[in-house]
Length: 219
Length: 227
Image 1 (cartoon, chains in turn cyan, orange):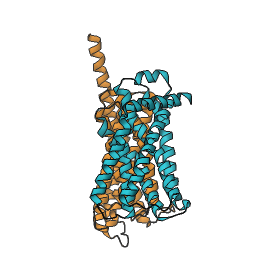
Image 2: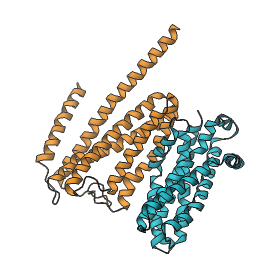
Image 3: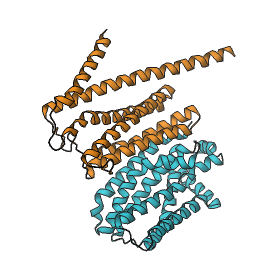
């Protein structure tokens, strides 16, 4: 636990020095949102379209920032030192929590802007909050693992999205249908199926990542 | 000798099954002549899943043993899996044009096979982006296992949850087989014969890959000794 916490603190401090990931992710979200908003114009799109657009913006913005956590270690050549001081599980968890916080920061900015710009009416904030909460775990889990895989490859940026998309697609599919439910229903239990699928897949992907991370990290 | 007989037997049975699929097995009401696609489309889709499973198995073996041979096997499996997935997509798409009047309409089945193609396309682009050999083997094995976690979700769960027009008479939700006796015979013999044939093809590829690896090691040792 201590090691996980220390790695998280180290990454946060490093992030506050350069603010690379947070800037990239937030600006990407704002740019995509304004592009979508311009394209739709004054017309209000249907609920189905808005729910899908929200997740598309969320997904591609997170793709622009989540991979930085491991690429940074390769660029500054600190990966080998990190291997000496901490165990793989702790490294994975520390970086996973960092990405989780990054996603929360993204949503704090994106959600109010999206509601304001797209005239997005949410009837059940409970469902919406649960969807984002569980969805964050799935996105951060898969994203962190794929980031670890591609940090050793060439052409990292393009590869990250290509590799992460199929793995994160179940999160996207159930996230979109849960968000749709959040604009139609009021009771939390009406989105039970979607939230269960989202939770199950997030747990599976995080477990598989923790089990496989040893092989990625140790050469 | 026995192998030779088995080969001829396989050939004869295969010819018989294909002929029977066209002349002997009755057609299903409502589908007409398009019933026959089941004898070829379903076994091909089944082979894709079998090869992806084998690919995940060899990836796992590689991570355990760190022997590059297993990585080469995993690559062969995934190549064959992607080939069969493309065949299943094409046959299914042609059938969909006749029955649903469009080649592609994002039916849950079509979505799931498309995602399978994406996953293994990503697998091969990862391989091409990694130059160092053991690193490529290790990371692509991890990715293949990680991606395989989502394969059952797409192949078995998504088409069951969402409404699909895809006829599922074999593995339907109740688990009953809803086919006429002659259809069933032709279908299962086609399934079994194709499995045998393509596992045999895979075995030949495996031997080929193994010989290539042995030859490379032999040559490496030779240049090493000369120095």
